[in-house]
Length: 233
Image (tube, rainbow, N blue to C red):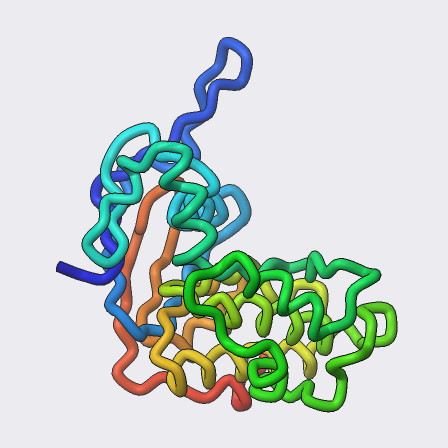
């Protein structure tokens, strides 16, 4: 059994009297410790995929499994614990609490977890040991995203989900964040899933899932992923 399994997953939204299929029979596997890029155009179903995998939305049909547990069968209470303990989220916008320091933002997430990592240690790992006591307004965009990544990692999750994490960043800062996510995956053994519309990002992944019209249109395994530092787009 793969670490993550999607099996014929569908998601249909009811928009008044109209049904809209955001995901239509999607199937794929992800192995533990992989750096995965999910790529496709706007409206292809990428974010819906991520929301279902992260327990923020439920599948209309099909099965979603993480580490041997059928997430798609969880009730609301089980989904709450799943999001709290098993999933780390990194979004395009950092969603930091403005009146808390970088360290306090990371500690906020770790307080709700079973086996959290030390906030100062994780911030040091993302290159912010000198910024522990700074507030978000005192940090650059790239530094704020590093705090957001540290916050997700401090939960010690099974799976790190990243939705367009470089979308609000400039080119060089975006490359640095991609490199940090790639290094984190390989150094810690965390499974990382990154959602993007940018085809250039596919070369850094172990596994690429091309999404089109609500389906996994193509799945490619890279035997030799390149370093994010070499990316150009």
